[in-house]
Length: 428
Image 1 (cartoon, rainbow, N blue to C red):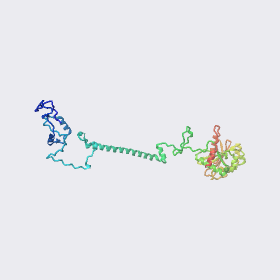
Image 2: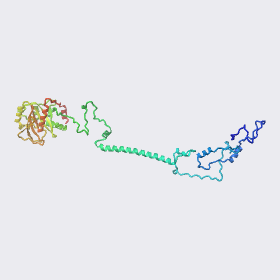
Image 3: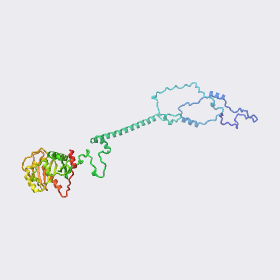
Image 4: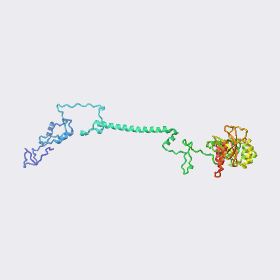
């Protein structure tokens, strides 16, 4: 309530009377200034609010001026009365001669410089910390260009991968057939035909594919080093049926690309070898008694792939080589007709003429050509206790070479069972 901070009841002020000590304590000293409502009403009439005439003065200059200026001692009566807190502040009266500033028209929204909320100038904030519009624009443009650059790089990398995959498919896709083989560029799928891994390399069959089709081994039906059984049923033991079966076996030999003479032992349904006398009689081969009496029971049928044409031949055991050779020489004019059941071709003509002589190693050969587009002939020799007959020149020579190798003392000799061969013929 009292504004005179230097006032004290224990000190005397100039011009003030000293109270009498004899007066009553309840008397009020009139020299002490008392703040009354009358003074508050008078101050409202004379009080004027101070305002800054120059609005461009910065907050820093005002603060510096207030700090530098020192308050001068003012007497209690000269001080500006302060509005009473008990009275409501009346609105300031308009000063005569001062006109209000014209109201500002609202600016359209598209002309406004909209800024983020965090960049709005707060009240009483320093002017130095206020961000300029140029800095805001630069920051926004940088963020936009950064996003554009990031998206561009991502799209470029994606296009690069797609183009690379398409190029790879154009180069290597021609060798693949289907989606399953294309998935095989990036991983190794397990095929259903692939057998389980075994420790023995012999038990792993090779799967035939487009890449190794030419070099993959074919399932071998016949042996080129050992005799094979050829089983004939009783009803097939005749010239017509037997020739058909021989032709079928020859086709299988061609499929295996075998170029060596393949030896077959003719057997019945129980795999019992058939002797030559019964075989020749069943096929209608007219063999004279002088020749058959000097022949043994064992014999073999040969099928030979010569220039992709299968030819046939015989190898019959001999009891007496010299006597057999003389007997065949006497029957040479009939031997060509007797061998017709084993000719695999029907396109030929036999002309009766003399045989000619030739040789192959130690073997003495007799031969006669037959008119045929397949260059058929009748070539025979008695060699190493056997009567060997071929339907072409190379057929007989191949049989001689084969017999020389298999009859060697250190050459293994084993007969192949005819179960697989008989089944193969049934499936033809």
